[in-house]
Amino acid sequence: MGYGLPALEELVESFRKIKGVGRKSAERMAFEVLNFSDEKAEAFAASIVNAKKKIKKCSNCFNFSEGEVCPVCSDPERDRSTVCVVEDARTVFALENVRNYKGTYHVLEGAISPLEGKGPAQLRIKELLERINNENIGEVIVATNSTAEGETTAMYLAKLISPLGVKVTRLAYGIPFGGELDHADEITLSRAIEGRREIN
Image (cartoon, rainbow, N blue to C red; front, side, top):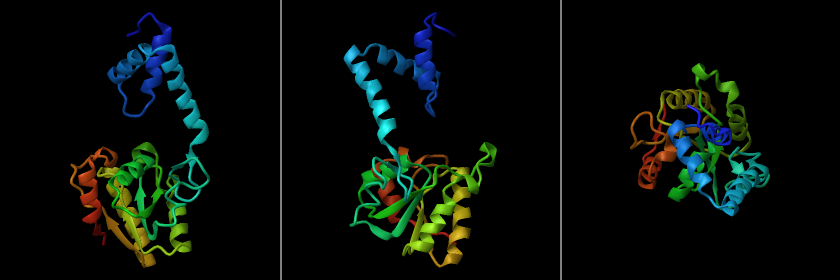
């Protein structure tokens, strides 16, 4: 239902374009923004434009970065023999908050999902294999979400990588099936990393 206010309707529809945001949530955010002062609203809009201009994909792992290479890949203290494979950059941020993982990451930019027309060719799997071939990687931790798509992707990667002589492990989950890693708390994520198991 419209509000008779085209500008408000446009704002609500803009928020609805964010994945996972429904009509009610979009309305709440729109009304919150309307209560901002002019200065706060301008700063809010400027931060979105600034982030879009400055943040890009790391050329090595495809995590978000303000430079050619992200802070994790450029950190000489990270353990480059271990790579944690995730679906998106949100999971990188969640795992970094745990602070007990010292390896690097590889962002697939999604999961295998035939219903969405997304197969292995649409993911950053080729780039992951190139890293395995070119870098001294001994373990690949598959940290895809605990969903049907995440599990399918995990099994596909295990079958692809195991023959290369690289250990492939899967996070131990303390979250229900269908849960997303970036929603899990730090203790759960920490235990998931420590209790990871090898995929046969």
